[in-house]
Image (cartoon, rainbow, N blue to C red):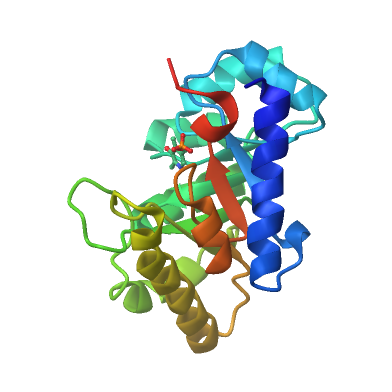
Length: 226
Ligand SMILES: *Cc1c(COP(=O)(O)O)cnc(C)c1O
């Protein structure tokens, strides 16, 4: 399949999934996960009109960004080390992977120094997996006060990478749980959290049915990674 074909196929699947549950297709944004993909493939997708890309490493984002048109939007979707905050803030339109209060404080401080108000998502470790980053869903309610005190951060919603499952349907309860958590948080702290980043190549349609507003799709668009 060419990129053109896979792009239109993924877009059609997004549209169909949204319509199945009565959502407007444009309520779902596609984050093209370009990690470990050559710049030529990103250029090809950009030429088809796509603008939103996701990288999981700051280093890789920094290498690719100067080789691509300036009107691209980058989302950071992987762990952020303290020493990478300063370079990533001016580059990324959103940091989807804020996984602790300490990281939020550090981003807040650097953002203040740089005069920025970064958009972020809170990454949630839904199943308490030791191998995954993210807030414990229960502790979130005690930590949210500290997060809201970060006056520079625009907290837009939640992100999660659910446990690996064999079938997309098995991921549905996790997606539903993330949405329920968002709903509860929104009610308790009275802030708007419109974004839910969930769903990858194997399960983005199920995620959309459960309310995803951002789907992070890599291999279904670009093919296997190097
Ligand atoms: C790599 C990655 C994806 C995309 O995975 P695919 O299965 O290739 O779609 C999505 N989210 C995160 C956080 C990733 O690291």
